[in-house]
Image 1 (cartoon, rainbow, N blue to C red):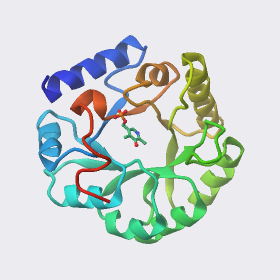
Image 2: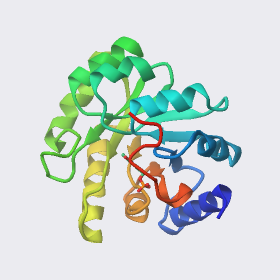
Image 3: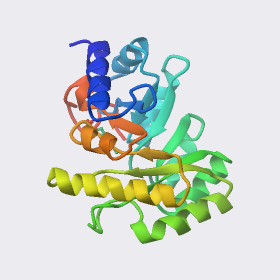
Image 4: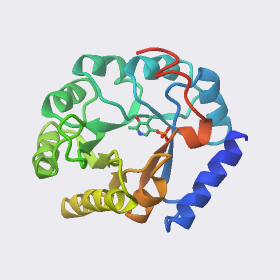
Length: 217
Ligand SMILES: *Cc1c(COP(=O)(O)O)cnc(C)c1O
């Protein structure tokens, strides 16, 4: 299947789940895929691309076609911020003030999302729901532009997944934040039904990833 066809099918699923395919931004996750995939995605009109590893993002961004908007979606060590700051359009995974401070230092006034851990599992990334308001405030004090919240859905029943996304939506609404980055290949419909404004889709556009990363971290 071509990337354009796969993208059309993803947009149809967004519509079926009750989302507006023009309004829900499709972030195409190219992690673990080659530079050729980046070029093919852009040629198919997918200009919002997501990466989870700093080194992989930097290597691809330096060789990508003009106009690509890079979304950093993975767990990020503070010492990697400087390397990717020139390229990142939106930082999805800000979950601690030390990381926010480093982003503010290398990309002043950058647009960020605060990652929320809705799984209840302490080993998962993201700040706990009760800590989100303070994190948003801390980011603003550093001069960052907080656009919204990001979450990775839990594993579990559809009801549990939907409740988790609904929690993210309620938190964002309470804080007056417009963007909600939620939904991947496996839980796209649940996320859109609960008000996602940005879905991050890899597998359903590009097929399975070969290894954790083809370019390395
Ligand atoms: C890899 C990844 C995705 C894409 O996952 P797929 O299941 O391939 O669609 C989305 N979000 C994050 C944070 C990821 O790490």
